[in-house]
Image 1: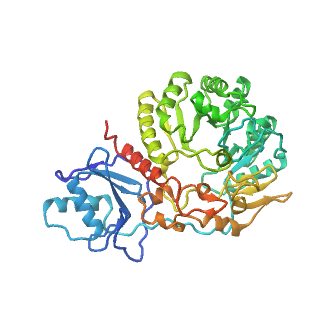
Image 2: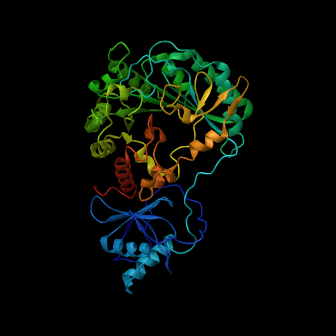
Image 3: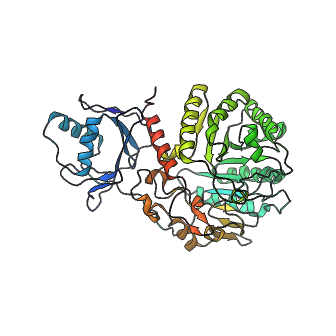
Length: 480
């Protein structure tokens, strides 16, 4: 919304974010400004964190991360709000009084302080989402594979372990208001290599759901190369959402060739058209390395002209697994940001939803990027992150939080809480960052290496810039 100091009245709220619960009173307000994140003390106390950044079209945007709100201001209003935030005296004039009145009506000054998010220790680990790594085998040889998967056959997950995981999340979900269990099929390897197991587990999910009265939602993450029209039809009838990994341009999809070096590009184009034709709910998930960072617009054009897909998710490559041994590099942060902005705008023109995790950070207000996953390996080991499913992965011990003992899943609650305790409060650089409650420290896996946990996030500049961009889109595109 626009707050213009030349006009009176309450501002119009344009930001359709989820409503926040009423704030609780803190012991006292803090004072001062740190890196653009501020609070104030005084008669007109700002009751929540405030960050102000330059808008791309001039003026400024005021962001209230813990309230999930943002609004535009002109330069004069910005200066007044900055004084209020800093606890400075305001001139006794009509403009200052009007701004104070508007902020008061919005619930930004006075009243109780907004509490900061915290990560509290768990007494029990009760997941309602299971990530099932059906196999560690893969038919592709992706140059940046985080799991360093290989084509040789490895033992798949047993039906016993898969069913036990399903039973657990259904049981836990039955005790929640949502009454909804979530299941993801993912690799490790390529889950559709174990097609019969995938079908059997899905049948069990359906029958167990009916028996318990718990709703479920299944998501399949796949490279798509093993899908046929018959398999797509089955997916349409049994899987609620598909993430299809595809690097879109032929020369970039070469990073995702078959294990024997053959191109997988033409196969994926056919599969995507089949998914569209049969009405499967899906999006394309593209891993962006340094090689592709400047070509996101070309990718959106290709998707529009050749596939019929309606949603593309671009994610910067993580320097983990095979990408390290292959010497591949993550994209330059500012290059990715500018390329993403252009691709997003083009997507709006063409009717294609263009997004990425950092662009969706406006929907998160938390002290931690994610909770510990209930990610189950084929052997029944539970990892707090699906990227760390094998003992040769750097960080495997950090994320290993439990196992299937032959009759049920056993969790090490101390390990779970130790993992969860690594949050935004663990990294001093987050203290002054305007994105800290939206980014929540970022994906922990991106900070882990054989040297330990990095205090510096690998994509902080990218994250801040895309948060600003996404906020501007939600308050109205200044570029028209």
